[in-house]
Amino acid sequence: MSRLSFILILFNGLLLVACSNTKKNANATSTQGIPSLKETFKPDFAIGAALNADQILQKEPNAKVLVPEQFDAITPENIMKAEVIHPEWNRYNFELADSIVAYGKEHHMIVNGHTLIWHNQLPAFVRGMKNADSVHQYFVNHITTVASRYDGKVYSWDVVNEALNEDGTMRKTIFLENLGDDYVVEAFRLAQRAAPHTKLYYNDYNIEQPKKRAGAIALIKKIQAAGVRIDGVGIQGHWRAYNVPLADIEESIKEFSALGIEVMFTEVDLGVLPSPGEVTGADVNQTAEYNAKMNPYESGLPDSMVQKQTISYEALFRLFEKYKDKISRVTFWGVNDGQSWLNNWPIRGRTNYPLLFDRQFKPKPAFYKVIETKTKAEQKAF
Ligand code: G3I
Image (cartoon, rainbow, N blue to C red; front, side, top):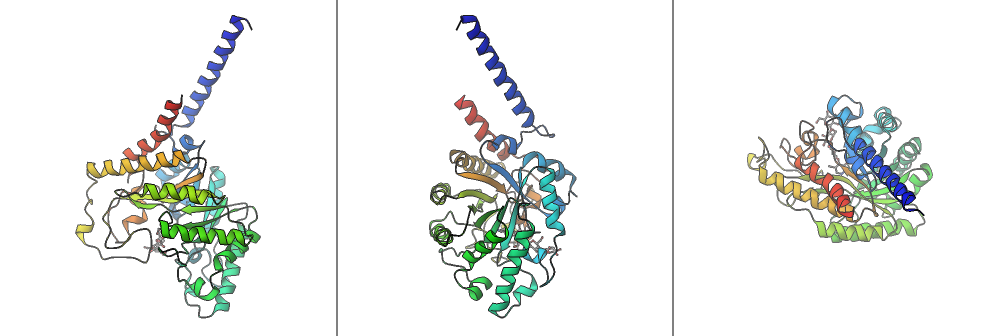
């Protein structure tokens, strides 16, 4: 090859790289003039948000713009739960669920159905059931009807949510008590039949903790041993900004992925408020009374706490980046601080700041650090 053709090839190559970078950067910027989470992390994993009913119905002007720019995966925060979607024995209410499917389609986002079997937010007719036959009939009908309606329309289902206690044993729920130990396997078997084109996941909080993690691994192995399909596990990720269990999270990514399934972080938020007593994780039944001492940041978050949260989010995303080949999705539990469930749990009426966007939908310092975990790593590699 002549020196001239070598230089020409080199020049063309550089031009191509420059053009593709320009295109990437153009995509990576949103209307707010800020980078886009979903574009930044596109090569590695999907970036999701849980949406409330108003956001799904596009009634909130700010979320309407921000959500499709920042996220490529959505989870309904409440509207696919049994109490909403199946309010009476013979009546289903698919209106809102159909809306999130349409929303996802319109914006090319994957929709994670949440959730088929959970002991909370059950309809009154189920909570009042007194015999195993009725619970069994409900269980079969609910999974079959809902999962088959959305087969291929939702990308995935949290088939069973929060079936474990903190020590890794099975949680005593209406399902365990009436259907026995194998109900989780049966839920996946029914979902597999009803939704052959949909990914099927087990989802829980605190399963990065050693004992509960061991319980989750045993449960997943049991499903696999029964020849039933399970495609992934969702570690919820309701942690405290001042105490994120990074070592346990890392170990969990390794151990869960060794089972041959996807690992996801499905409900990430890093709350900053003090926890009453023994409350950790996300058990909605653990609540406490309001008292002003437990609501210290009503008029704004001090810089020291902003920094703590920023550092924690950065460390978390560095870890996610390190294991990007094992992680398929990272979803935040909400869009902005003002709408987070953590303003009302475990104590109602507090002011919490757990997400990457503030009450005005503006990106927080943590947002930029999260973006940098990817862009700075790219610069280093270059
Ligand atoms: O349905 C009523 C509605 O009729 C009423 O107008 C409204 C007024 O307060 O309350 C509504 O119910 C609330 C419901 O959310 C829907 O907004 C409940 O009081 C409230 O407790 C419920 O909280 C949800 C919680 O699950 C309940 O279990 C949170 O929004 C939701 O973020 C949370 O999500 C769970 C995940 O599904 C599983 N993992 C833990 C996570 C956090 O708890």
